[in-house]
Length: 164
Image (cartoon, rainbow, N blue to C red; front, side):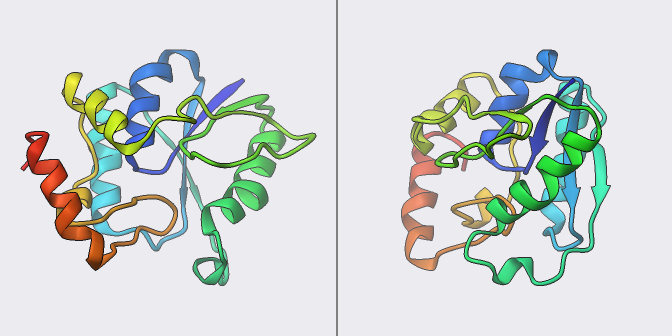
């Protein structure tokens, strides 16, 4: 069985567009700390792409304080969960990660793409995306964050692409 990890980021959007027909399940790890916009985008993406996500409720202590919360959730929660569920492949919405050895096969098909290329594809195909980006969030992943120094520059980039 094959899965796609839903994080709510632009990488997730493009993976859904490109690979949804190849997966058996879309998995969303709900740690309870997502901003409302991520939950809204999950519903919007389900409606737009026509899937129902498997929502895995988690209680993970102290993960946001970790150096890389996405790596922690991927290695310690997602991969073991998928392996126990009989999955052999997962499409990852992360760039710059290394596969976990001896576990579920991981594919990172967007590796090498930059944000501009991802946004260009989203616009070209009129795909939905999480509205945290419109509020100045530079990254939307396991622990969405906004950098004030990048907000103005990033907002200008989205405006130039016709999103604002």
